[in-house]
Image (cartoon, rainbow, N blue to C red):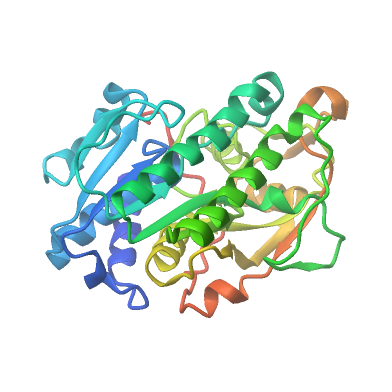
Length: 343
Protein backbone atom coordinates (compact mmCIF):
# COMPACT_ATOMS: atom_id res chain seq x y z
CA UNK A 1 0.00 0.00 0.00
CA UNK A 2 1.27 3.47 -0.82
CA UNK A 3 2.19 5.67 2.07
CA UNK A 4 -0.34 8.34 2.93
CA UNK A 5 2.10 11.18 2.23
CA UNK A 6 2.76 9.91 -1.29
CA UNK A 7 -0.96 9.66 -2.00
CA UNK A 8 -1.57 13.19 -0.74
CA UNK A 9 1.25 14.59 -2.89
CA UNK A 10 -0.11 12.85 -5.99
CA UNK A 11 -3.60 14.13 -5.22
CA UNK A 12 -2.33 17.68 -4.88
CA UNK A 13 -0.50 17.42 -8.19
CA UNK A 14 -3.74 16.30 -9.82
CA UNK A 15 -5.41 19.54 -8.71
CA UNK A 16 -2.67 21.65 -10.30
CA UNK A 17 -3.15 19.77 -13.57
CA UNK A 18 -6.86 20.64 -13.80
CA UNK A 19 -7.56 22.77 -16.87
CA UNK A 20 -11.15 23.85 -16.13
CA UNK A 21 -10.06 26.20 -13.32
CA UNK A 22 -8.95 29.72 -14.44
CA UNK A 23 -5.85 29.75 -12.27
CA UNK A 24 -4.59 33.15 -13.37
CA UNK A 25 -7.58 34.80 -11.69
CA UNK A 26 -5.87 33.92 -8.41
CA UNK A 27 -2.72 35.84 -9.32
CA UNK A 28 -1.65 37.97 -6.31
CA UNK A 29 -4.85 37.01 -4.47
CA UNK A 30 -5.30 36.79 -0.70
CA UNK A 31 -7.66 34.01 0.36
CA UNK A 32 -9.19 33.66 3.84
CA UNK A 33 -9.97 30.06 4.81
CA UNK A 34 -12.01 29.16 7.89
CA UNK A 35 -12.06 25.61 9.17
CA UNK A 36 -8.48 25.48 7.95
CA UNK A 37 -7.45 22.36 9.89
CA UNK A 38 -10.49 20.32 8.85
CA UNK A 39 -10.35 17.77 6.05
CA UNK A 40 -11.58 20.14 3.32
CA UNK A 41 -9.77 23.23 4.59
CA UNK A 42 -6.48 21.36 4.86
CA UNK A 43 -6.81 19.81 1.41
CA UNK A 44 -7.72 23.20 -0.08
CA UNK A 45 -4.73 24.99 1.45
CA UNK A 46 -2.22 22.24 0.62
CA UNK A 47 -3.43 22.18 -2.97
CA UNK A 48 -3.15 25.96 -3.27
CA UNK A 49 0.35 25.84 -1.82
CA UNK A 50 1.46 23.41 -4.52
CA UNK A 51 -0.32 25.31 -7.30
CA UNK A 52 1.21 28.54 -6.03
CA UNK A 53 4.67 27.07 -6.42
CA UNK A 54 4.32 25.54 -9.87
CA UNK A 55 2.26 28.35 -11.42
CA UNK A 56 3.99 31.28 -9.65
CA UNK A 57 0.68 32.90 -8.65
CA UNK A 58 1.87 34.75 -5.53
CA UNK A 59 -1.20 33.62 -3.56
CA UNK A 60 -1.44 34.41 0.14
CA UNK A 61 -3.64 32.35 2.48
CA UNK A 62 -4.99 33.60 5.79
CA UNK A 63 -5.91 30.48 7.74
CA UNK A 64 -8.33 31.02 10.62
CA UNK A 65 -7.59 28.37 13.26
CA UNK A 66 -8.68 27.75 16.84
CA UNK A 67 -5.44 25.99 17.77
CA UNK A 68 -2.25 27.35 16.21
CA UNK A 69 -0.10 24.53 17.58
CA UNK A 70 -2.30 21.98 15.82
CA UNK A 71 -2.18 24.07 12.65
CA UNK A 72 1.62 24.25 12.75
CA UNK A 73 1.75 20.45 12.85
CA UNK A 74 -0.85 20.08 10.10
CA UNK A 75 0.95 22.44 7.72
CA UNK A 76 4.57 21.85 8.80
CA UNK A 77 5.83 21.37 5.23
CA UNK A 78 3.77 24.23 3.80
CA UNK A 79 4.83 26.91 6.28
CA UNK A 80 8.33 26.96 4.78
CA UNK A 81 6.91 28.20 1.47
CA UNK A 82 5.68 31.44 3.03
CA UNK A 83 2.15 31.35 1.62
CA UNK A 84 0.24 30.77 4.86
CA UNK A 85 -0.38 33.11 7.78
CA UNK A 86 -2.33 31.76 10.74
CA UNK A 87 -4.97 33.85 12.47
CA UNK A 88 -5.95 32.40 15.84
CA UNK A 89 -9.61 32.75 16.69
CA UNK A 90 -13.05 31.56 15.68
CA UNK A 91 -15.85 32.58 13.35
CA UNK A 92 -18.26 33.35 16.18
CA UNK A 93 -16.05 36.23 17.36
CA UNK A 94 -14.01 36.94 14.26
CA UNK A 95 -10.61 38.59 14.90
CA UNK A 96 -9.79 41.87 13.20
CA UNK A 97 -8.18 41.23 9.81
CA UNK A 98 -6.15 44.17 8.52
CA UNK A 99 -5.01 42.64 5.23
CA UNK A 100 -6.91 42.78 1.98
CA UNK A 101 -9.09 39.73 1.38
CA UNK A 102 -9.93 38.84 -2.21
CA UNK A 103 -11.65 35.50 -1.65
CA UNK A 104 -13.18 33.65 1.29
CA UNK A 105 -13.75 29.93 1.74
CA UNK A 106 -15.99 29.48 4.77
CA UNK A 107 -15.45 25.84 5.72
CA UNK A 108 -15.77 26.09 9.52
CA UNK A 109 -18.54 23.88 10.82
CA UNK A 110 -19.40 21.26 13.39
CA UNK A 111 -19.25 17.82 11.74
CA UNK A 112 -19.98 15.31 14.51
CA UNK A 113 -23.59 14.10 14.59
CA UNK A 114 -23.56 13.65 18.36
CA UNK A 115 -22.39 17.24 18.79
CA UNK A 116 -25.46 18.46 16.89
CA UNK A 117 -27.53 16.97 19.72
CA UNK A 118 -25.29 17.54 22.73
CA UNK A 119 -24.22 21.07 21.71
CA UNK A 120 -27.06 22.27 19.53
CA UNK A 121 -26.71 25.93 20.55
CA UNK A 122 -23.02 26.00 19.65
CA UNK A 123 -23.78 24.24 16.36
CA UNK A 124 -26.27 26.98 15.49
CA UNK A 125 -23.90 29.75 16.58
CA UNK A 126 -21.11 28.46 14.36
CA UNK A 127 -23.34 28.22 11.30
CA UNK A 128 -25.42 31.37 11.72
CA UNK A 129 -23.27 33.87 13.62
CA UNK A 130 -20.07 32.69 11.95
CA UNK A 131 -21.50 33.07 8.45
CA UNK A 132 -22.96 36.48 9.30
CA UNK A 133 -19.56 37.71 10.51
CA UNK A 134 -17.80 36.47 7.39
CA UNK A 135 -20.36 37.95 5.02
CA UNK A 136 -19.93 41.31 6.74
CA UNK A 137 -16.18 40.96 6.24
CA UNK A 138 -16.66 40.05 2.57
CA UNK A 139 -18.77 43.19 2.10
CA UNK A 140 -16.22 45.36 3.91
CA UNK A 141 -13.26 43.94 1.94
CA UNK A 142 -15.17 43.99 -1.38
CA UNK A 143 -14.28 40.36 -1.99
CA UNK A 144 -14.26 38.94 -5.50
CA UNK A 145 -15.68 35.61 -4.36
CA UNK A 146 -17.13 33.90 -1.27
CA UNK A 147 -17.97 30.20 -1.01
CA UNK A 148 -19.97 28.83 1.89
CA UNK A 149 -19.63 25.11 2.48
CA UNK A 150 -23.13 23.93 3.18
CA UNK A 151 -24.45 20.38 3.28
CA UNK A 152 -26.68 17.93 1.48
CA UNK A 153 -28.67 17.80 4.73
CA UNK A 154 -30.49 21.02 3.80
CA UNK A 155 -32.64 18.87 1.49
CA UNK A 156 -34.17 16.96 4.39
CA UNK A 157 -35.34 13.49 3.36
CA UNK A 158 -35.95 13.18 -0.40
CA UNK A 159 -37.86 10.23 -1.84
CA UNK A 160 -35.91 7.14 -2.81
CA UNK A 161 -35.03 7.09 -6.51
CA UNK A 162 -35.26 10.88 -6.83
CA UNK A 163 -32.41 13.05 -8.17
CA UNK A 164 -32.10 16.14 -5.98
CA UNK A 165 -31.54 19.52 -7.67
CA UNK A 166 -30.59 22.86 -6.13
CA UNK A 167 -34.08 24.39 -6.39
CA UNK A 168 -35.57 21.91 -3.93
CA UNK A 169 -36.11 22.40 -0.22
CA UNK A 170 -36.36 20.03 2.71
CA UNK A 171 -38.96 19.95 5.48
CA UNK A 172 -37.43 19.61 8.95
CA UNK A 173 -38.91 20.17 12.38
CA UNK A 174 -37.02 22.65 14.58
CA UNK A 175 -38.21 20.63 17.58
CA UNK A 176 -35.46 18.06 17.11
CA UNK A 177 -31.97 18.84 18.41
CA UNK A 178 -30.34 16.85 15.60
CA UNK A 179 -31.81 19.38 13.18
CA UNK A 180 -29.76 22.18 14.73
CA UNK A 181 -27.23 21.41 12.00
CA UNK A 182 -29.30 21.35 8.78
CA UNK A 183 -31.67 24.14 9.83
CA UNK A 184 -28.78 26.44 10.77
CA UNK A 185 -27.17 25.59 7.43
CA UNK A 186 -30.37 26.71 5.69
CA UNK A 187 -30.28 30.01 7.58
CA UNK A 188 -26.63 30.52 6.65
CA UNK A 189 -27.49 29.89 3.00
CA UNK A 190 -30.31 32.44 3.24
CA UNK A 191 -27.83 35.02 4.50
CA UNK A 192 -25.49 34.27 1.59
CA UNK A 193 -28.34 34.81 -0.86
CA UNK A 194 -29.46 38.01 0.90
CA UNK A 195 -25.95 39.49 0.90
CA UNK A 196 -25.57 38.63 -2.78
CA UNK A 197 -28.83 40.32 -3.74
CA UNK A 198 -28.87 43.28 -1.34
CA UNK A 199 -25.16 44.14 -1.14
CA UNK A 200 -23.76 42.52 -4.31
CA UNK A 201 -21.44 40.31 -2.28
CA UNK A 202 -20.43 37.46 -4.64
CA UNK A 203 -21.50 34.80 -2.15
CA UNK A 204 -22.07 31.28 -3.46
CA UNK A 205 -23.04 28.02 -1.81
CA UNK A 206 -21.45 24.61 -2.20
CA UNK A 207 -23.75 21.82 -1.00
CA UNK A 208 -21.30 19.03 -0.35
CA UNK A 209 -22.07 15.38 -0.03
CA UNK A 210 -19.92 13.42 2.43
CA UNK A 211 -16.26 13.78 1.50
CA UNK A 212 -13.48 11.26 2.02
CA UNK A 213 -9.78 10.86 1.39
CA UNK A 214 -6.31 10.84 2.96
CA UNK A 215 -5.53 13.50 5.50
CA UNK A 216 -8.47 12.86 7.80
CA UNK A 217 -7.75 12.87 11.52
CA UNK A 218 -7.40 9.34 12.82
CA UNK A 219 -10.34 9.73 15.20
CA UNK A 220 -12.59 11.50 12.68
CA UNK A 221 -16.17 10.44 13.43
CA UNK A 222 -17.32 10.22 9.82
CA UNK A 223 -18.12 6.86 8.31
CA UNK A 224 -15.29 6.72 5.76
CA UNK A 225 -12.68 7.41 8.45
CA UNK A 226 -14.18 4.76 10.72
CA UNK A 227 -14.03 2.24 7.88
CA UNK A 228 -10.40 3.20 7.27
CA UNK A 229 -9.50 2.67 10.93
CA UNK A 230 -11.14 -0.75 10.88
CA UNK A 231 -9.06 -1.79 7.87
CA UNK A 232 -5.82 -0.48 9.39
CA UNK A 233 -6.47 -2.16 12.73
CA UNK A 234 -7.89 -5.34 11.16
CA UNK A 235 -11.09 -4.96 13.18
CA UNK A 236 -14.53 -5.80 11.85
CA UNK A 237 -16.75 -2.90 10.82
CA UNK A 238 -19.62 -2.53 13.30
CA UNK A 239 -22.66 -0.65 11.98
CA UNK A 240 -24.97 0.95 14.55
CA UNK A 241 -27.84 1.10 12.03
CA UNK A 242 -28.98 -1.16 9.20
CA UNK A 243 -26.90 1.01 6.87
CA UNK A 244 -29.85 1.70 4.58
CA UNK A 245 -29.00 5.36 4.02
CA UNK A 246 -27.97 5.95 0.41
CA UNK A 247 -25.84 8.83 -0.76
CA UNK A 248 -23.09 9.90 -3.12
CA UNK A 249 -19.55 10.52 -1.88
CA UNK A 250 -16.80 12.87 -3.02
CA UNK A 251 -13.03 12.56 -2.91
CA UNK A 252 -11.24 15.42 -1.17
CA UNK A 253 -9.41 16.73 -4.23
CA UNK A 254 -12.65 16.67 -6.21
CA UNK A 255 -14.16 18.76 -3.41
CA UNK A 256 -11.25 21.20 -3.75
CA UNK A 257 -11.72 21.59 -7.50
CA UNK A 258 -15.48 21.96 -6.99
CA UNK A 259 -14.91 24.80 -4.52
CA UNK A 260 -12.42 26.54 -6.82
CA UNK A 261 -14.77 26.17 -9.77
CA UNK A 262 -17.62 27.77 -7.83
CA UNK A 263 -15.35 30.46 -6.38
CA UNK A 264 -14.04 31.55 -9.79
CA UNK A 265 -16.88 30.66 -12.17
CA UNK A 266 -20.05 30.46 -10.10
CA UNK A 267 -22.99 32.86 -10.10
CA UNK A 268 -23.47 34.99 -6.97
CA UNK A 269 -26.39 33.87 -4.84
CA UNK A 270 -26.52 30.42 -6.37
CA UNK A 271 -26.10 27.00 -4.78
CA UNK A 272 -24.26 24.09 -6.37
CA UNK A 273 -24.44 20.41 -5.47
CA UNK A 274 -21.00 18.78 -5.27
CA UNK A 275 -20.86 14.98 -5.41
CA UNK A 276 -19.52 12.14 -7.51
CA UNK A 277 -22.78 10.73 -8.82
CA UNK A 278 -21.11 7.45 -9.78
CA UNK A 279 -20.48 6.61 -6.11
CA UNK A 280 -24.15 6.46 -5.08
CA UNK A 281 -24.69 3.50 -2.75
CA UNK A 282 -25.94 2.53 0.70
CA UNK A 283 -23.74 2.63 3.79
CA UNK A 284 -24.12 -1.14 4.07
CA UNK A 285 -22.97 -1.61 0.47
CA UNK A 286 -19.96 0.62 1.04
CA UNK A 287 -19.11 -1.25 4.26
CA UNK A 288 -19.23 -4.61 2.50
CA UNK A 289 -17.00 -3.34 -0.30
CA UNK A 290 -14.43 -1.91 2.12
CA UNK A 291 -14.53 -5.03 4.30
CA UNK A 292 -14.01 -7.28 1.29
CA UNK A 293 -11.04 -5.23 0.08
CA UNK A 294 -9.58 -5.03 3.59
CA UNK A 295 -10.02 -8.67 4.60
CA UNK A 296 -12.44 -7.96 7.46
CA UNK A 297 -16.16 -8.50 8.14
CA UNK A 298 -19.24 -6.34 8.70
CA UNK A 299 -21.19 -6.72 11.95
CA UNK A 300 -24.37 -5.02 13.15
CA UNK A 301 -25.08 -3.56 16.59
CA UNK A 302 -28.35 -1.71 16.07
CA UNK A 303 -28.97 1.12 18.54
CA UNK A 304 -32.24 2.96 19.35
CA UNK A 305 -32.54 5.88 16.91
CA UNK A 306 -33.45 8.37 19.63
CA UNK A 307 -30.15 7.81 21.41
CA UNK A 308 -27.53 7.46 18.70
CA UNK A 309 -27.63 10.95 17.16
CA UNK A 310 -27.80 9.62 13.61
CA UNK A 311 -30.41 11.00 11.21
CA UNK A 312 -33.17 8.75 9.97
CA UNK A 313 -32.64 6.74 6.80
CA UNK A 314 -32.25 9.03 3.80
CA UNK A 315 -31.77 8.74 0.07
CA UNK A 316 -29.59 11.62 -1.06
CA UNK A 317 -28.87 11.27 -4.77
CA UNK A 318 -27.52 14.70 -5.69
CA UNK A 319 -27.82 16.05 -9.23
CA UNK A 320 -24.60 17.91 -10.12
CA UNK A 321 -25.65 19.25 -13.53
CA UNK A 322 -25.30 22.90 -12.46
CA UNK A 323 -21.71 22.45 -11.29
CA UNK A 324 -20.75 20.36 -14.30
CA UNK A 325 -22.07 23.13 -16.56
CA UNK A 326 -19.29 25.29 -15.10
CA UNK A 327 -16.81 22.75 -16.46
CA UNK A 328 -16.20 20.73 -13.30
CA UNK A 329 -15.15 17.09 -13.72
CA UNK A 330 -14.48 14.48 -11.01
CA UNK A 331 -11.52 12.10 -10.98
CA UNK A 332 -13.78 9.15 -10.17
CA UNK A 333 -12.00 7.99 -6.99
CA UNK A 334 -14.39 6.06 -4.74
CA UNK A 335 -12.72 4.79 -1.59
CA UNK A 336 -9.57 5.60 0.33
CA UNK A 337 -8.88 4.18 3.77
CA UNK A 338 -5.94 6.47 4.37
CA UNK A 339 -6.23 7.89 7.85
CA UNK A 340 -3.18 8.30 10.04
CA UNK A 341 -2.41 8.25 13.73
CA UNK A 342 0.02 11.06 12.98
CA UNK A 343 -2.82 13.47 12.16
